[in-house]
Length: 279
Image (tube, rainbow, N blue to C red; front, side, top):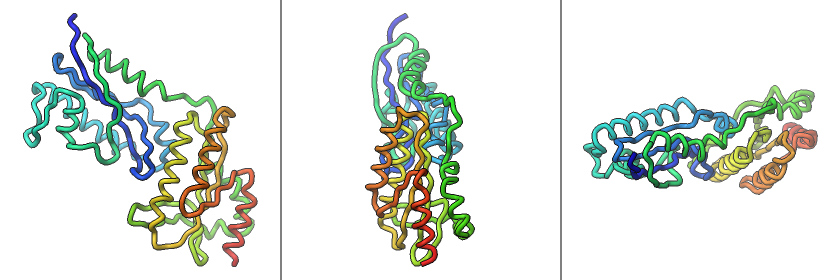
């Protein structure tokens, strides 16, 4: 069977433009000679929910479904551009530009490539496995989440009758809102956020730390004063400790002078919180 040229683009999810981190979310392959334009999205979303507790999987999948339907329609119509655009749709980049104009919002595009194939469907499967699916790992232990990390601090705060006074608080700023799970106000807001780094890959550890550092960068323009506290938990895999230490350093150097404490040292931050509450 004759080989035909194709192009492809890796689609990526960007949770916050200020944090800058991205995760691969799907792959679009276009082969005009075979009337083929198809988007294959990832099968597992665990890395996303691990990295972003407020990740809206339903909304993202809906957007990707709309793109997939549009790509199929354009291929069936002979790669003619939508009426309200002037772009060429016979490449992966051209198709996306015709539909979106530019990569904006939470779904953006990353690396691009081209090649030849006699079977674009098989090529799509191969590229998806190489660039997306192989980075999804199955966890073989019960991963500790943020609430598990908070348990190390909870008893201290409960004994001091501070826990019952804490509530969720949102720091508002022109660049975006930052939500902390447990906070109290005494002069200024004291905002506590437990963070578990017990993940199954380094990328998720890196992106979670970068996301929260980005949040503090956003909150830098807030008119209200607040003191952030991070209680951080180590990964179960010893081989990921260097990634954990890098995450700890990144959070410690973030704006707003955060207090970063490992969960085994949570008694020290409990004393600070109790003092701030009583004085």
